[in-house]
Amino acid sequence: MPDFRIRKMELKDKNALMEILHLADPHGEGHPAPELVYRRWGEYYFEESRDHCFVAAHRATDRAAGVILCAPDTPGYQKIFNKHYYREIQKTLDQVENSHPGTIRKHHMAYYRKREGVQLNLVHFRSMRHIYREYPAHLHINIHPDCQRLGLGHLLVDALLNPLKETGIKGLHLIVASDNSKGIGFYRKYGFKELLNIFPRGKNGIIYGLKTS
Image (cartoon, rainbow, N blue to C red; front, side):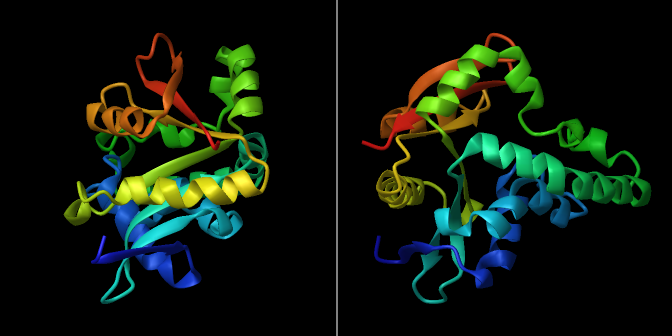
C-alpha cells in the first residue's frame, strides 16, 4: 500500500481519530457534537489502550486515515468503562440534548445511555463467558469515507494480530450490525467466524471471532 503506512497510534492522532469516528460511524454523521461520538467510541482506547491500537496513515502527511481500536481484556475494559467513562458520557449527552433537543432520537443514540456489556452479559451469560475466555480481546475498525475499499482494514487487522499473540492473547472478537453486509463480508473473508447472534436472533448484531494463531 504505497500511499499509506501502518503504525501504532500516537498522541498526535487524537484529532484524526475524532474526525474518523464522526464521519465513519453512522451514529455520528452530521452530529452537532463529534466529541460525544469520540467519548463513546474512542476515548477509552486512546487513553487506556493506545499500545493495542493502530492507524493507517498517509505517507505524505502522516495523518491517520483509518484506525483499529482494541482492548485486549474485554471484561476489564467493561469494568473501567462503566466506572470511569460512562458517567462523563452521560454528562456530555445531557449537555448535547439540552443544547440540541431531539439529538438522541434523531441520531438513534439511546444506546449511549446503556452501560457497556451489561445487557449482553445478562442475556447471553454462558456464551459470553466462553467468548471472553477464548476471544478475550475486542476491536473496532473505522476508515475515513474517502479511504475506504483500499484494503486498509485488512492491513490494520494484520498489524494487530501479532502483538496480541505475543502477549498470550489467543483470540479477539467484535460485534457487527446484522444489516452491515459490507462489514460482515469483510470479516468473513478475513477468516472471522460467527460466534453468536444477539438481542435476540441476531436482530441487532452478530459476534464474530478470530484466533490469533
